[in-house]
Length: 190
Image (cartoon, rainbow, N blue to C red; front, top):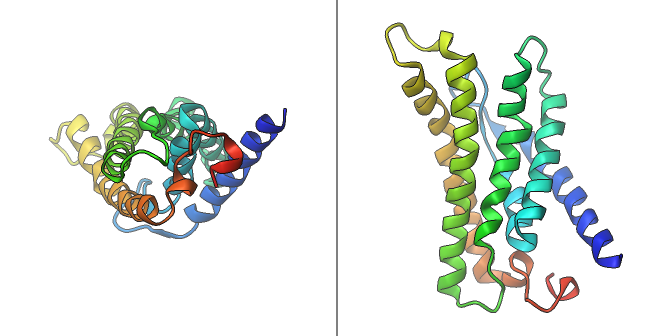
């Protein structure tokens, strides 16, 4: 019971942190959504600390709250699902690459890069599908809607993934027990 309470508390705290970090963003050139922010850090943190279940639960909550905050009136309901809950939930699958703190530094770094790339590609896929189905009208005349959606969404997802990888490589070197479970239980993880 205590482990479950700790798990749920971490999910709640990391979800709240992700929402707060989503307000600090670089909007850039993305007129129809997307930005560069640090909101993915807490989702990936939960994925690496608690595995797929922690990452997916945190991502789902973040996506649902962002959907409410972003004021999505007039957007197709299926697009809302693809761009918010599903996209952020999919990022939590980075937990497939979870390793513990006693793994070698090289193994931890490889797992971080692979996990963040995997989660980012899954999130990207959800945004691209939404773009092809619901935002094809915004593609320049004569441009393939799939290509437009890929270019548009990659333009902000690559910077987000690179910033996240850099932050996590720093964390795995300086605070591996914060980022990775020690294998001896939750009390030892932080």
